[in-house]
Structures are given as structure tokens and as C-alpha cells.
Image 1: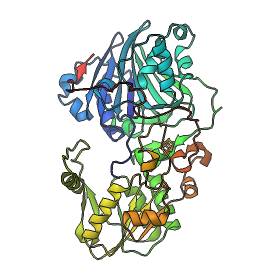
Image 2 (image 1 turned 45 degrees about the vertical axis):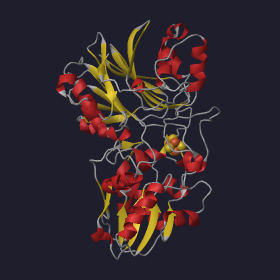
Image 3 (image 1 turned 120 degrees about the horizontal axis):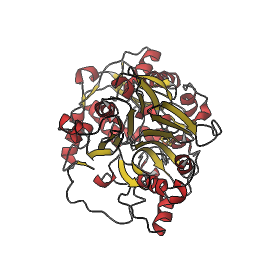
Image 4 (image 1 turned 90 degrees about the vertical axis):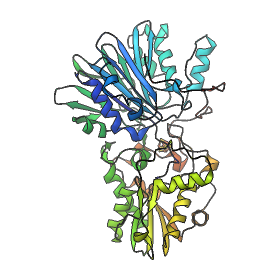
Length: 482
Ligand code: SF4
């Protein structure tokens, strides 16, 4: 995969563990693939909440290691890694958001995208509310603090019923964590437990493995899970199973980590199935199958298994070139891409090559990689993509380019083949992809391929919808305690 589609935040929370902060730190590391723009941890000792957050990766924000971690209160914690889907990549939008209202302190971390964020914010601003960020997450705190909501027997359940769109949320109060998932279950969220009995919630099960917690179950769509001194309790803010789920199948195709189990299925195994399906739908005679690493790798294994064409690493990825690699001109950018994804000439020269990627968005970077494979002496190149052509934008938390920028928008397969400069191109069909799922096909969102949006989107949803004024950040403030 080359960074054309962006991850959309990762969550980790743990209650009742003397090493809650340290475990959150490692949990966030394992979720780093879900966002590298900012990172933060909010923690409590049962009396008050502290928060430390900043811009960049977990490694960068917590670069002073134990000097920071040891200062944070340590019996429960929530953590967040961010990629912005509403609100710019800015210091003011880092999470968790720590606030104080009439009931005391609360810290909030969010994965997803609220499609009614603009409407809610307009409503609150009309009554004089002041927002300190341009992220949709801050609106949730205003909803929580509204006196008429505070007066409800279950304020949180009441608040969640005001939200539309995709959300997994972690709320840290001094005495508890509350974790909630939207009624469609669009983004993944699971529960684990450590050997000492502490409960953990995380976006993906890979974070449970990293913190030696065992997988218990997923948070159900429309469920609130409460972690406190009495253990785990559950309640629903919508009637259980009253809404058909719309799990984001793109989590399986690209976002989630191969060793995670989400929506009841291991990600690596699912991607291999997509690769096998791809080989059935688009066979070709070739000498090697090579992935665009890393996210195309599992599907390439599946393609190779099904087609009996040997798997080989024609491209290798450098994990030391981050997305913040600064490339001041076109030549430098081309060199940066070459460093990030290098060709193994010996594997490619004189060969008929099947190149497998998980998906193609704009296609410009894929075309660049194809050119380098030709330069390395490939005899034939056949592009295979393990999901259908992406033709529609996502309003539920994935930062795709505009519809006009999508390669498959208004292009047929021949035009895509010509654009990429390959001998042939083939995508796994929508039916083929859905036949690979373990849950019923209608339990998944497929809107970016089909254009069928399960949650109607009737307002303008874009990343900068809440940025009425241009904010100038001349300097990035240091990572801070609050
Ligand atoms: Fe996932 Fe695509 Fe649906 Fe967005 S539109 S939630 S990326 S399946």
C-alpha cells in the first residue's frame, strides 16, 4: 500500500491495573498503523485525571519514555492515536480531549466520523458555546455537559442517541471507563482481560496481544461497556440487534493489522481469501506473484496459493521512511518513494509479474511503482487488486480523496489498464469480496464501491467542515500535560 487512503484513529483503554499507563503506551504502539498524526494518554488514580498528548507518533510524543509515563496517575487509562478525518492535523485536535464540566473531569477518545457534527456544532454555537478545537469529538463533550442531558438517568446513553455516523468512543471518568460503539458497528472495538483480571478495550485485538490480554469479545453495536471497581457491566443505548450492522469491510481489506481479529475473523486469513478469489476471477499465466507491501502481502499469498504461481518479493518496503518524510520538490519526492518501496531487480528482470495490491485509490503512486518494475526489466506486468474499484467517497471515517480524484471514477478497466501502464488489470468483484466474509454479506458497509450509504448523508461532510476560519499555527507547541 502507498499512502493514498488514510487510517482513522486507534483506541486503547484499561481499568484496574497498576501498570495501566505503561500498558496503554504499548497498546498504542501496536495500533500505530491507525494514525500517526498525534498520540496521547489520559489516566486517573481514582480521584483526578491527567493527560499528556502531542503531535506525531507514539515514539515521538513519549520520546522521554518513563520520565513522562511515570508522572501520569496509574490505575486506569485511555489512549489515542490519530489520523484526522474531521478537523485538520493540528495540535488543538490531539486526543484524548480532557475537559471539566458540572460532574467533574472527563477525557474522551474517538475513532470514527460524525456526519451530523456541523449541525450539532451550529446548534451549540447559536447558544454561545465556545469550541477550542475543529474536531467533531469536542461536540460530544458539549452534549455531555448540557444541563438537560446531565439531568437524564443515563446521560451517556442519551448523548449517544444524538450522534450520527461512525464512532467508537472511550470516556475516562475518575472512577470508570465507559466504551461505546455506534449502532451500526462500523469501526471495530473489542474487549480483553489481563491475567490480573483488569479489563481492556481496544480498536483491534493486536493491542490485546501486545499487552498480554486475552480476547473476551467485541463491543456490540449500540452497546456501552462500563469498566469500574466492580468489573465489567454492559447496557445498550439502542435496542440490541435492532439495526443491521454495517461493519466497514475496508478494515479487513486494508486498515486493520494482519494479526488482528475483527468482526469475528482474522485479518490475514480474510485477505488471503480475497487473494484466492482474485486468482479465480482473474487468472493469468505468469512467473511470479509479488505484493505491494505491506497491505497487499496477504492477498498476494492467497493469489499465489490459488494460482500455483510462485510468490516472490519483487518490492521491499523501508519501515524507516515515515509519512513525514520531507520532500521539497518532484525529484526528491520520486526519490523518497523509491527509498520507501524499493525494487528487487533480481526477482523481477525477465519475468512475467503479477503485482497484487489491496486497493487503488488515485492510482498515481501505483503507476509510479509499475514504472520502476518496467525499469527493472519485467517482461509482462499484470495488476491485480483484491477489492473492487473504489468509486465513491467515505463519510464514515476514512479519508479518501474526492470522487473526481478516484482512479475508477468514470474509467473502465481498459482505461485503468492504460493509465497504470500494465498488460492487464483485474479487481476482485463486489460479489466475490462479499462471498469471502464470515458474516452475512448485508452486515457490511460497501458504500465506497457500491455507492449505497447505510446511514444517509444529507449534509456536507468534509474533513474541514468545522473550520470556519483558517487557523495559523506558526509553531507546534510542545507536548503537554493538562
Ligand atoms: Fe468502510 Fe468504504 Fe464504508 Fe467507508 S464507505 S465505512 S471505507 S466500506
